Each structure stands twice: as C-alpha cells, then as structure tokens.
Length: 431
Image (tube, rainbow, N blue to C red; front, side, top):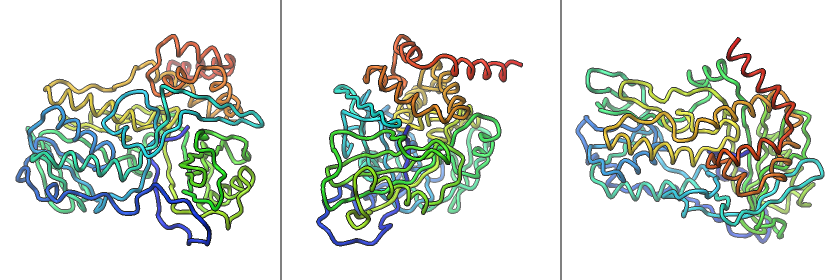
C-alpha cells in the first residue's frame, strides 16, 4: 500500500529532446505571507507552540483556529522554504478542508499479481493525490488571516523542558514558553523513537523511489491508477510498482519494497526503467524525468506515546498516525488533529486516538503475516480486491468500515495462515 509522505528532488535528470506534455506540478516554493513571519503574537510566551510546520503541524494550527482559539500560537521549523517536495494520496471517504486541492483523482484502480490484474471502480470514493505545495500555500494563507499566529523558520528545536505551569522550548535561535506543546516533527531514521520502535514492535519498512515522468508519446491510461503491480521480480523481497497517471503522457511511477533489503537509488532507477520498458514499451530517450520522490516509512504496531509530557502531545507520524498495515497517513492526521484541537479548545482531556480500536488488532495481524509470508502477499492483495466490493474495501482501508464489512473482508481471505499468525501473536503477548 502507499503512503503518506513522499520526498521530491527536482531536476534529477537533464532534459532530452521531444514533444513533452506540460507538468501539473508547480516549480516554485509556496509563498509564505510576510505577516506570519513578523512576530505578531506573543513575546516569548505562547498558548501553543507547534514543533514542525509539516502536514500535522500546519493542520493542527488550522483546526485550533477553526475552533476559535485566540491564545498566541507559535510554529517552529528548521526549514527555510516550503518546497513542493511531497505528495499525499488518500481515498475521498470524508470531507477535509484540503481535499479540493487534489491535483488529480481516479475512480478506478488496479492490483496485479502474476498474470492476474484486478481493476475496481468506486464512484463514491475516488482516490486523490494532493501536492504539498498546494497544501502549504492554502494553509499558510488561511492561518495568516489570524493575528495570533507566528511562524519562525530556520530554527531547529534543541530541547523541551517542563517547568511549573509552562514548558520551555529551546531552539537554535531563542527560548519560548508554552502552555501546550504539540510535536509534529516526524519520525527521523536513527532518532531515539525510531530505534525504540524497531526494538519493541513488529515492523515492515516501506522504502521507495519514484520518478515523475513526461513521455514523448501517449502510453498511460489516465482513468486508472496502479496501486500495486506485483508482476515484477520478487527475489529481493516483497516488491511492487505504483503508478499515478496524470495524463496519457505524464505519471508518477514508483518502485516500492516492503522489505529490509538495502536498495540504492541507482538500483531503484534501474528497476523503474526496466518496468517502463516491459510494461509501456518506453525506451530511455522517450521520457524525461522531472523529479524524484524517495522515502522510508516504518509500518509498525508500536504504540507511540501520544502524551509526552504534562502539557505536551505528539502528532503526525511521531504520534502514530501512519496506519501500520498500509502506510497511509494523511486522513489519520486530519482526524486526530481535528479531534485534538476540539479537545484543547474546549479545555477537555485530548483523545488518545481518533479511529476505532478494533483496527489495531487487524493491523498487527496483517503486519506479522507480511513478515512471515511475504511470498503469499501478492495473491492475498489480489484476492482482497477481487472478492470485496470496492467501496467497502476502501472504507476498510481508511478505517471507516462497519464491523460487518470487516467480517466480510476477513471471510474473503485464507483462514489458516492468518489464524496461525493471530495465535502466535496472542501467545507472544500472553506467555
């Protein structure tokens, strides 16, 4: 399954001659309103200090303001620009303030295992792709309309210390006092949290590299996106191709591993090039690469601590908003940040989660199945998409299904291997 966040590196290859379709991606960073940077709110003391101006940090600020918060809000980030460096994909199962910004949507998607391709369509729940640049610009413009928000860029957070009724946040530039701290800085590889989850959980790393392509001739079907194509070589671990067509001559094509195997950028590129040749008949001189996206997403059943202090909370990936069995993140961030903002604005105890707890067990079982039986996963995915009605499956993948729909999906899958995994998991937890 695909994710959450994807990193884009512009200009990865030189241009080659040809009649290329225009790209839908912006080429300049999102504009930051000057009023946000002017230090309008607070003088070292803030009601809320938000660490990280990514998807989670900006979203929670948006929802706090939407709920009528008037205390000074400070957003800190070590970045200096808001580059169009990521995309988020998600099914349109509920309203968010940002869904209308999607650069493309697909009502049909396919999954391929061996020679079997399953194509499903949902008119009610299209698959959306949102570019980070559009998200950043929209949110920054929205929060700039409020005089109680200040954004400070180029400041790396160095420490957080609770003292009495306040929390001191020290950065590379200053020290700030906060009543509430919301930490949305992400889960960096090598960080203490990252190391702990590897040691104390079942986890499957999702690592990928994608190329944003423009071709000299029409080869893509813009009506259908490829969620998972497992017809590629599986000798190095569970692997699939992911393709989002933005037209007949433009697409994002990604090489994805659900495995701990080390794959270099050059190996990713070579495997994508082979796929383009084998599946679309494209030779290297027939396409141009406008950019690359590369990422590493831990899919884990680790229970991230939501509350990290008396008045401090984790949000985003650091708060466990990446779904363990799929890697999808965007909708979970929106749900939790909205619920958290409502609680804080109403002076209530913040919730620990915004999704039904029953999915926690199902995700843990599926993660263990992936680790134990990776060779069986392609057929499992194809069976899942083939036997479950598309809208019901989408609701399951987005944690909006009913218990009856969950049962229908469970009954569509082979029982013996999943029962073995579930039994082993229970024995591990209750020796």
